Length: 355
Image (cartoon, rainbow, N blue to C red; front, side, top):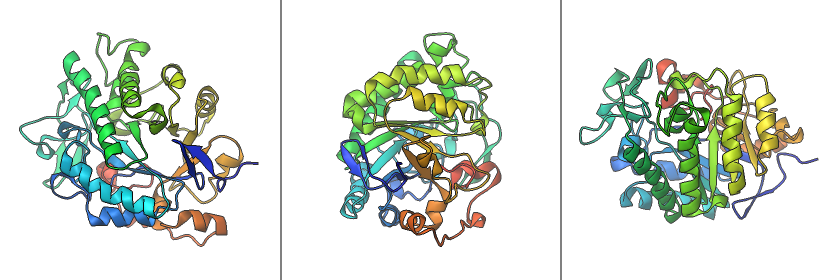
């Protein structure tokens, strides 16, 4: 029987175990969206993970959704990430950059040059966003034109190439949690009637085009995709996600991607199992739990539900988590008082989000 401690091949490399560090927004970037020595320490401490997936990294200036998040769209940002990847590799780890365009989740006070957030349709997200100026209501985003959509696809591909230049082993495209790719997938945030919206096949087109462009730029074996079917986070409404996500996976399955990463949002595992059966490559699951993913949840590997499991908050509290899981503990309990709650959940490492 395969266990969470067994190695697995991914992106042409042998991972030492099947435990992944889930992507979690840290909001610790320095000037110009560069990463700091604190970031180097943070990821190096967790290099015993089979796979590290970084916090969301914006592929363009307008893709920024939260304060003090890093990018991969300037030479300075790329150079700053090289310190992280070199250190992780020296410690024996493997690391993928999560490329995240926040879309309508953002605010003009975070963006330069008078930019405003963008989205498939001019539908504002409900609620507020935490900024360094305090909470701000979400604004109505700019509706992307066809040419702007194609330019955004190119931004993802450029950021992916920048990630490889920065020494990353690959990238994960953030298609979950209500950010731009997810906004194109969901019927309440994509009201378009052109080739980018309307039917399910049109609503998956942006995700498919981004995946194809990135895979063509850096190789499919270095390209992963994260999805969260039915996730209501950030104002998303997907009342019937099954057919849309099976259609999406049908489109990307022939590409030979590094992995598919599913964040579960329902106790009913039927769709996860269906996607697992449909996708022939490595399958990563972020398990639905009432709190942080727990030390016992790696049974999804034993049961064949997943090839890898991603841990969020538990990995924050236990940087040497693989060793602690193997020893059966002891485990530090994540201190949720250090996380921003309420409307600011997406801004930090709130356990219910797990990245």
